[in-house]
Amino acid sequence: MFDRLFKKEKSRQLQLGDWVNSYSKGIYRIETIIDQFYDESYPALGANKIGDRIKHRTIVTKRFLNSKFKKSISYESCSEAFVSKLDKSQYAKLQKVMEQNPRLLEELNNYEIPTRKTIYNMELQIDQESDLKKVNALIAFIKTGKSFLEIQTEMQQADILKLKPKHFGNYWFQLFNFNDEYLNKKKIWRDAELTKK
Image (cartoon, rainbow, N blue to C red; front, top):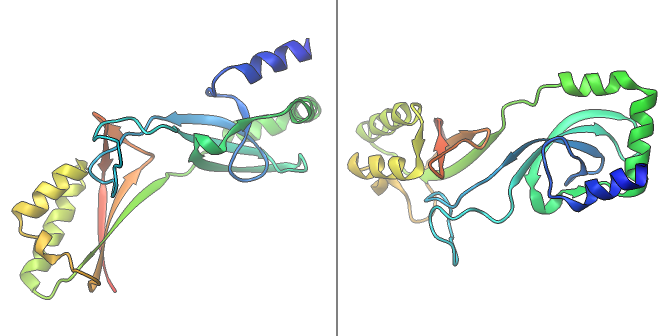
């Protein structure tokens, strides 16, 4: 029975609820699978086009046990390329741990993954108060949820693109995406921050 169940698990594509190995050591359970797409925020598209799906999905997992099969609850997010199903020995040990400690699974279920951020960094050279006001207005615009293309267009119309230096600026301008939010294959940025260097 166990062998049949294990073979069935190993043969199919990664799915929600699967027990897996992730980028870091330990035993993880898949909580979210995210399709991502190339958009204007990618520095190099190569042979890809805007709107093409990125080959490897993003896998968000909850860590259940460490490599010694002791409780170690946390989370991880990484490319599908780094995620693999458990081998037969790991799967058997996991089943044994869950049978002996049913409350551990309840702890894992109750653990909430914190908000995950993707950050896009840009340097700006701001020397005029008027330019500072323009960038602060842009931040308010971004907080309503905008694609990178919409942000670029707004920067162009507000004459902010001229503030991008050839080498180093005196401010960091950062865009924030939360929990890999996409709309119509475009990453959505919902916050921004301007920090003086």
